[in-house]
Length: 180
Image 1 (cartoon, rainbow, N blue to C red):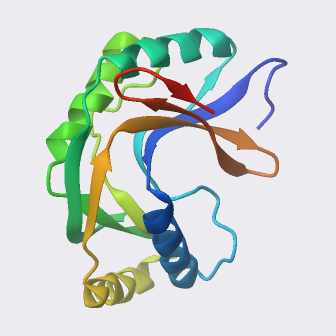
Image 2: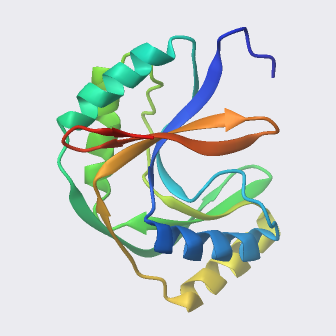
Image 3: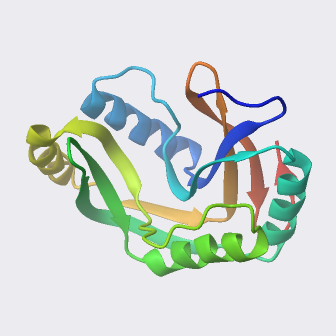
């Protein structure tokens, strides 16, 4: 993929607190058989997109996040996405509607963001698995009996840096301030 001068690739998500981030990172590495993850654990709100005018995006995200309220959510249910050749094992939130509200609000406030009519909030546990391994990995995750309780109080803008690694770029706290 060739980017034009001044164009960067981003996505928006909800990051995990440090302790939970370390635990999920370790488990994902074990499940995927990789030491380095392509992105920190997160709940995606907006799939990857390109932006030339970063200052416009940051300004709009600051305004939007100042109008949001924190909420609590739990992740316990294990599920999968299956594609033609690969699958993904995920954790689903007990209150998916809160994430859907955030995703819709971002689309309304920032028209340059992609719209996903099939948006399903989730936390990825293992990605790009061969189809024959999906059920085995799903069972393994179920056996761990993970219960993740989060207080969602910010949204993070992730930026892609060479070579194909996503990093936390800016975090926007609900109620106002930009961090990072």
